[in-house]
Image (tube, rainbow, N blue to C red):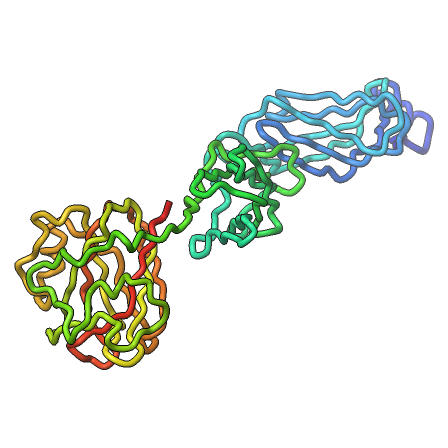
Length: 390
């Protein structure tokens, strides 16, 4: 307790008391350093309790002192904490006094720039982003690892909902200090959704959760297309043909690794770019991968396009594949370019290419060879394999 009193002659002290209502001006112990704890349309204020035993309450003023809150003290305490509710999303100033039972107050303590958060802050929150370049890894034991990027705000957690291999709904929680999480089992192609929670500042008393779940990229399994259905009866005008005693069907005979002549598809001599077409025997709704194996020696393609269409009727093009307008005519006929496959090796070993994620119905494949390893007009192939994503 701090007492303010006069000194000197008695008449001077009497005159002093006259202005104070004939009593001493008494100050209770002042509030110490105040810690601000922002919340959702509320705010927490916390400070170390004063050692002044006469204090019975603390008074908090705000909104230019038009509003107040009273914190009653019923006994000794180390810390005083107040939560003021019903506020607007705004930056406030608070004035805090301590008071004893007689109404004596401390000197005021000002708390400025105390921010209260609410729907405006919440509406701008986004779920934690996943790693777009490497979103997931399917593990050999049936588990699935999901990869996320580091959170750019004060993330608390991300809840992940999925279906496990038994078909049961499951949930996992990704903490902010790690960027990946492994789900112990997962039902392929089933949806995965996620929702993140944040605090606006360290020490906040409320957690804000993004209003909706976002969808994780679909996790596909790759099922090899049935080569027993493939046919070599879909040749179109201006296509190359199998020459030198070889066969187009060698592309799907199941051979493994680079093959030697004559166990290959060897085209006739036709200027590049040149094309060939074949039938996969059924419609696939989401081709996702292609693997190409070259010949064990030369004429291997190192740059080729893969085009697909569901129905070959009226799909023939008039222009040669060397014509600058060929691609546009292909598109006008309903063909979709699934992938341009560019190899940086000698073109011999099996190399896989992921097809652009733009699923269309495909039964017929047309390959346009742009370049071979030796710049020959002959292209040689050992095997082509396709997978459908499902």
